[in-house]
Amino acid sequence: MSAAGVRTSVAALFTALLLAVTAACTGGDGSSPSPSSSSPSGAGRTADVLAVKIDNVAPARPHTGLERADIVYVEQVEAGLSRILAVYSSDLPPVVGPVRSARETDLELLRQFDRPTLAFSGAQSRLLPVIDRAPLEAVPPSKAPGAYFRGQDRPAPHNLYLRPERIPFTASGVDAVEELGLKKGPPPPGGEPEDSRTVRYPSASVAFTWSAERDRWLVSLDGSPARTADGERIGAGTVVVQDVTVRPSDFSDRSGNVTPFTETVGSGSAVVLRDGRTYEARWSRSAADADTVYTGADGRRVDLADGPLWILYAPRAGRPVNASSRIRSPRGRSSSTVTFLASSCAVQTPSFVPTM
Image (cartoon, rainbow, N blue to C red):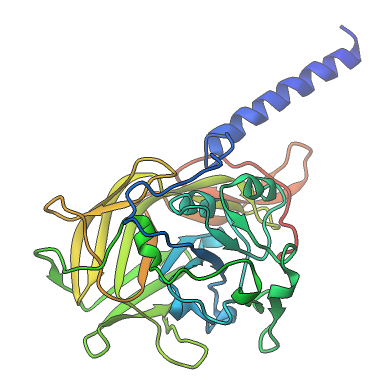
């Protein structure tokens, strides 16, 4: 075989191996999402939802409009930090932010809703076509430049805000939890008194302290009280701490840190906080387009207290994601990556596009 033929064969073999590794490490099965996604166990009323990806580091606080979200998801991102996905349906604030970039986890998470609208600042270049194929309405600044603006009270990238009224979305007036088949109702039997609960990520924490006076779990982020733009404490009616697997995804940030992927399809343990008590529970989600079902010790679905629902995806014990190691690339160039204690599967990918 000629030298050119050998190079061609080697290149083909390398490509096949890379595709195989990618398929093993990615957050999905590699197929395009179904064009229609429904919530089969929904309560019967349609809750058109707007999901906004929100920054959650100290320079991004206080948040704007977060207190008016129906559901607040907290997930782990690069470097062990956390980021928020706020879901709106019953009410819509005039401004939401700071807005940041989307992650692969968001796409699987949002399949529970019927074609939601997703507002985000940008994404890793290889993730953008995946977002375009997802069963949702993507509204980044490139598609709705008049809906976003830069605040003057903090530096970029922590100062990008969304005016929801300027995107093609109208609040339905229906609580977004109904789209998930959840409902407000009395607490389950049993439970234990609980004053506070802290969920820890490698480089972040979210804590909840019960306030009988406000009938809310008051939120603290990284040890500081979470407040609205007007200085009021942010509170939750119900908190769900969902035990999940967090593993490497097929994507990375601009520094080469591999993005964690949170598996929200499957089952596991959970803790439900409401009315100053804690309840052991189980969660299960059979498929990406299925609802997440939360059941108590009696096997019945757990109802929610009045007020916003916060869902925290807590990494299962023994599967931490730690960043800091450096490896040598095949051509001898040094590049940053992260060490995953639970897996050695890490694929180097192009850096993030500007997230505005």
